[in-house]
Every structure is written in C-alpha cells, then in structure tokens.
Amino acid sequence: MYTQLDIESHFDEKLKIAYLNQPETMNALTKPSLADLKDFVKECSNDPNVRCVAISGRGRAFCSGQNLDDAFVQGNEHHDNDIIRRIVTDYYNPLVMEITRCKKPVVALVNGPAVGAGAMLALICDFVLASDKAYFAQAFSNIGLIPDTGGTYFLPKLLGRQLANYLAFTGKKLSAEESKSYGLVAEVFNEEEFNSKSLEILEKTSNMPTVGLKLTKKAFAASYNNTLKEQLQLEGDLQQEAAETEDFREGVSAFLEKRKPNYKGR
Image (cartoon, rainbow, N blue to C red; front, side):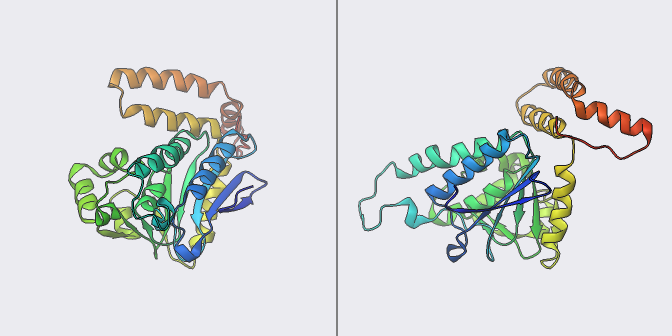
C-alpha cells in the first residue's frame, strides 16, 4: 500500500510505526513519501485498533529534509516559479495538519540526523524520543529558504523568539542532549538501547486511555489562541467528555479496587 514507507505493527496492532525507507538519500522527503505519510497518519487516526503512532527512519538518518531532485523537474533549467509553494501547500501542509489533529499520540523516533523539514517533521509530533547519535538542524537558511513544515508556527512557541531566530538564521546543529535541554526532545537514549527503550515508552502509551490523550492534545492546541477564560471553559467541556468514556470508568474502578487498569481506548 505504501511504496515509500516500511510499516511495523506491535502490541496486538495497537502501535503502528512508519519508517521512512530511502536510506540511500538519508530518507530525504519526496512528494510520494509525504503523501504516504499523510495517508498513514490519517488511516491510523481513524483505526479504532490503533492506540499510538510513531514515525522513524531506516538506516543511519531520521530524515535529511526535502529531496531537491524531487522538488524540481530534472533537466529543466527554467524551474516552475511556483513549484515550492505548490509542494508546501499540496504535500507538507496536509501532513502537518494530519499529525497535529491525529486522534492518537504521534511520536517521533529520531534515530539519527533530522535536518530541515526532517527536523520539523519530528518536532511537530506530540513528543520526540531520540538516539544520542541524533542531531537537529534548521538548515533552511543554508539554501535561502524559511522554516516550513510548521516551523514558523511551532519553533517560537517551543523555544521563544530569541532561540528560534538564532537556530533558523544560523542553521546551527543541536545534539540530541542539547535539544532535550531546550525542551525539543522528551528523552535521549544510548544508540544501543534506543529501540528497546523507545518501545517501552510506546507500549505504555499504547495502553493509556486514548480518548483522554486525544482530548488533552485538543486542549493544548487550543491554548495557543484562547484567553484564560476560554481555556477554562474548554477544560470543563473536555473533562466532561473524558468522564463519559469507558476508560474513565475503568480507571476509577481500578483505583478503588487497587488493581492495574485495563484501558480499551474508548
């Protein structure tokens, strides 16, 4: 089904991992791979059996950003002047929206370098787990471009104006540990332990009360634009929605019965 991705399933299909699978280009993004990723995330979002989604890369890199050979028609010295706008509008923006509105947690497993659009692909996920061999670089400025893939929206919110400007203007590489210190990465693991430690976290996430996590994502996203009063109203509305789920009832029962809850994601 997906020509550019390698898909793995774990934990009775509750976890789906999509691996960018062009290691010869350090998993550079192409129009087909962007379309495949968008479709993958959308399918997982709508699949009641899937409880957690992850994105990673095969080989030594997570993603090296846009494949420039794919962006332009080979052999055409007079490029379509609107080609970049159309790639951003038709391929990147729909993927950003699918990831940010996905009804399941979306986790980036950054196994190696994440550069340009590859760095932002990781940072727009709900959280990032990184190998100590990974690094992140906002390399857009190196070829005269601006951060896309949600970069101009998320970077100032994640980093503040000063640091967002600095990284965007200079293209400075940040190690995985530096990225964690800035709040861009949740956990960093030794390369040898990266897969096993990441799977432990993904297994736990796959067994959490999924609807509650979806509503948490919705509330966090709304907070960027809401007033405090609006956000408090939304919290009340979403908390009521969460309290009407089977998982809430199971959580309360498990607490009272002093046992581990068995959440179903509904």
